[in-house]
Length: 180
Image 1 (cartoon, helix red, strand yellow):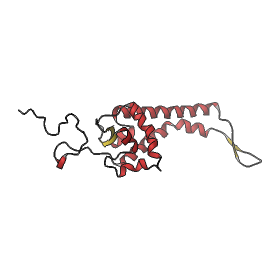
Image 2 (cartoon, one colour; image 1 turned 30 degrees about the vertical axis):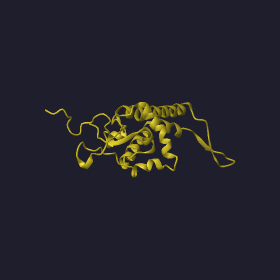
Image 3 (cartoon, rainbow, N blue to C red; image 1 turned 135 degrees about the vertical axis):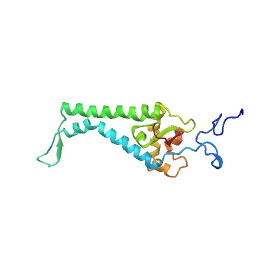
């Protein structure tokens, strides 16, 4: 019986995503490919659009007519039902954002889209989900990704850890890890 831990067992200060030397030791983590990240975002956006259906119906209910003098379209005031539907759609989309991108992703690492495509958001140092507060902060910090002509969103195409600028700032990574 040896007093040494088995090979690959993490110890104090161990980076769970470090590449093992010469292919020996713990398996390396597979960072999520950019295409999967985009696909997950599109799935989450599609679900958000479905949640907003009442809003779209409310907008469609706003009557419009043509001004007889100028020939330009003139929108009239929305009806009470249209206002209610638009409010339901906006509140629903906001609630879905908080639940999917902040709470669900923060606690489990998965949004609906990430779960479908088998990718997970985790802390780079811990390998664990980052929490609801940090997940919300990540959504805010994504502003940095869009500032230099959306370069931050393309950064994972050539980055070693496939991180956006927001991921680098908050020390998070997206990994391949199917739910299960």
